[in-house]
Length: 278
Length: 341
Ligand SMILES: Nc1ncnc2c1ncn2[C@@H]1O[C@H](COP(=O)(O)OP(=O)(O)OP(=O)(O)O)[C@@H](O)[C@H]1O
Ligand SMILES: [Mg+2]
Image 1 (cartoon, each protein chain N blue to C red):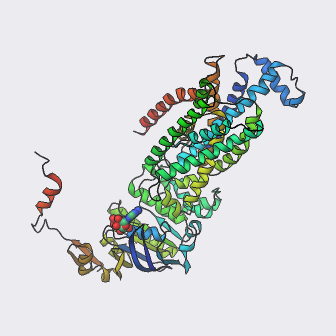
Image 2 (cartoon, rainbow over the protein chains, first blue to last red):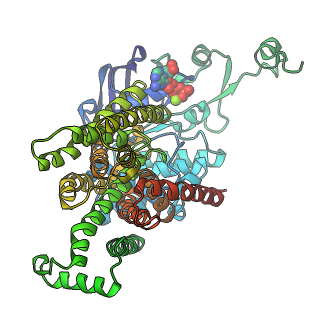
Image 3 (cartoon, chains in turn red, yellow):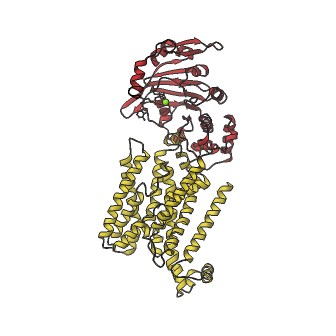
């Protein structure tokens, strides 16, 4: 459903993404993981048409969306951006309603059907009782669900999420990811999500794409990609990977030099406190 | 929906009240009874059959009415374009003056006025066009100066706007003083005392404003989407570059028309949208039309003050908007801060 072929993109002179090939099938959830600066957000921006690719194509249902204008593309692909800097004085309802924009034209004339879709999406994401509250005054997790509802009313085949669990506590992490799974299977959406938490990726994704320096290192089932060797090479730190006691999915245990009694004190002194107390 | 209808109703009534007051009050006292009779008879009969010789009627229809309408249109332009600039730049400080558009328009207008046109009427119709050109050149300059890559950081935009604005104002003062106009007149134009008399200037600005108003009032939805930032706007299906261009062109068109025959009138474009945002929230589908109505009302009231405070002397209305506007604005800011904390 969502496919890229030899995608290259970057900013001005810096190339970031190189030869990225991906595919996501309907009903499937694919996680994109990788260290800071790997190019994950850049990938989201290229796929959603904010950044023009230097080379390569993005296909949705065999249509090259890099050639579409913003309005048409927004009918195929919706983005749940990281929730920050939302305008302070829009209500939840108004915000979700804006997801209908690709179907409305300049005047934004709304029909009964548009309002019905909004109530359905609010219901789906469990924020119906927040409809009249201001998005600027919600918690990060609540804002995330508002943006998810907004992406739902866009009624697209593909859903892109940039770090959907960053602001969420344990309960809301699993609620949100469960919801994403439900959306994928019930609405047969192709879901691509950028996520930092490797354990959550292992628990909720069908497949994982490991990105490093703008290139796909490996892609495949969580058990194949999230191995000690792969992670050590990409994240530049040693980790333990054990099978999850209940599900057998990979469970990633970070390393701790503190527990090993190997605190690296020199660099701390040099970086932070030298001269501060004198 | 209910709130929308009620807010429009209230603000239309306020505007009508301000219009009546503005026509009724002036240096020549017209008794309320006479005023009402003249208005009523003008509604029943066509203007032509009214006894033109009667001085009161002449004062009302030849002097006060065109003046009032020009002031109302200028205020409406500044209010609506202020709201739209604030929305496009996502900055509550963006107003036609701060980003330099008004001064650029003023410079264009002064240039056109200093030319000896073969026909007076031709000159009259050229002034708003020249003001528009001045506004566009300014915006282009500010944009080029403030641009960083493909983005337009607000601080650098406002810095560039202020710089260009003071440059244009100085050039404008220079031209005005050199053109042999008396210093007093030139100064008064810059301070918003340049309101031209009679019907021709009203007719000259109406085409510009009509186009501008229609575009601005119909752009509420797009402005709402733009509030989420350029990236999200694109992901929601708005071509944000093009939308911003259209909005800036339309807002500058109305600003230029307002400046052309009224001089530089500050603060209306800044304050009016703020007040409406406090009362009715910042849904731009409602905010832009309300700022348009409220801008007209506010400038009419300011102009009324300007005419009566030192009567029979008339103050430049820009002085009143600044004198009344600045403290009022500070009060509103304080109030809104207390509410949110
Ligand atoms: N607007 C920009 N202009 C220039 N370079 C950029 C821009 N945005 C990102 N980059 C660079 O592109 C590279 C990839 O950045 P990107 O934001 O895609 O990383 P990421 O994988 O999302 O990282 P993180 O995990 O920290 O969110 C980085 O080296 C970054 O410095
Ligand atoms: Mg990122």
